[in-house]
Image 1 (spheres, rainbow, N blue to C red):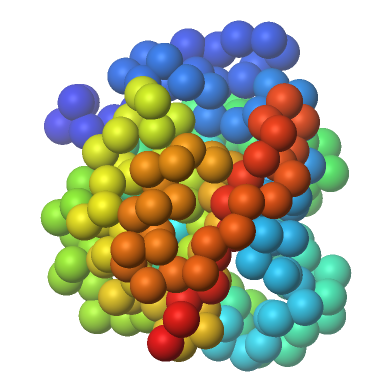
Image 2 (image 1 turned 180 degrees about the vertical axis):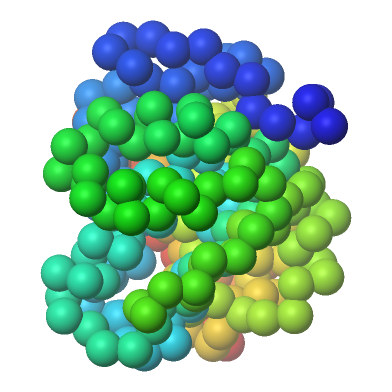
Length: 224
């Protein structure tokens, strides 16, 4: 259904902006640098990578975090397979994903490798070093039925001020329920209600330096 697909406008040198949430999909400064700072470094990656390491993500968007993570996995020389599951309510059309990813020349080879796989909806991709699943639908409904647990979470929904549903305490509790003991989560936002929701769910939460225009971000470790 059309309403289940992302609706975009393009600004500032091909940065996609959600019309539904009036929010850009990645930093206007440098989306790749932001992904590496917030989600990779925020989860102590690539140091924690191992065969079968499982990343879960709220908000797949353009697929930039997946590309950045798989690039880091390959650069680290890890053997085995990375597992990556992403929950997305409004999957982006394949041509829009390719257009957004084209902004990052450093990832061009990897983007081209994955380009033929994008279907614009729920799907799975199996490569020699990657098991990827995109779960389409509202995470408030889909995550509770997910039978797995993640080692690390990328919490990358749109701004809490514009997409508060993605950051509610009930959903943070589901994130915790689907995290291994000692697992981590990271997000670009340092909004108080998000941090409190993570703490209530059982995470130890810290506010650390953010990327670019954002002074702070959030890191969390599950205490169980």
